Amino acid sequence: MFVKVCGLRTPETVDAAVEAGADAVGFVFAPGSVRLISADGAAPLVARVPDGVETVGVFRRQPIDEVLLLAREAGVGTIQLHGDEPEDHFARAAEAGFRTIRAISAARFTAAGHAGDERLLIDATVPGSGTTFSPADLPVPPTVDWLLAGGLRPDNVAGLIAAFGPSGVDVSSGVESAPGVKDPALIRAFLAAARA
Image (cartoon, rainbow, N blue to C red):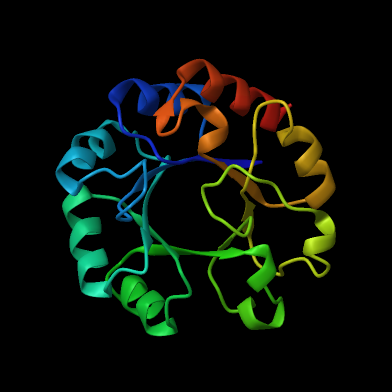
């Protein structure tokens, strides 16, 4: 089970995620997020991440030139785009050497419309809100690798994995002690539960 821990902003939480076995760590560059970090702030955190652990920059409705600049400055290897960005944004990210993840709400997902994506992240209607959605909201599963997100916590992730059958999971608010404040103990508990 692929596990991504997103919204990291401190050395301690990056280290906790890596040591607990996360496959990917995410850094949020989307203005307005309580988890916002600057490229300068993220760069030393990205540098702590060992080879083999994916580093992801998360963006939402930002110009693609800005996205590419911030991603390069931070040193991440993957660009995750929220907000119904056009296809050319994904093409330009790929041409620039980045892997891509398209994030979309369950309500907006259509299997036919997203068959060509490299990877998907399917979230609740309000990303980052900590709310879950039902398997009934996703009647046709994706045909590409996809991450389940939205309201995942150490106490519910195993059941939601069983219900949805995703390729992986993405957690942010579910491992926080307060909005935007990650808890290393919750990160470890989440990784253990997701892999159990």
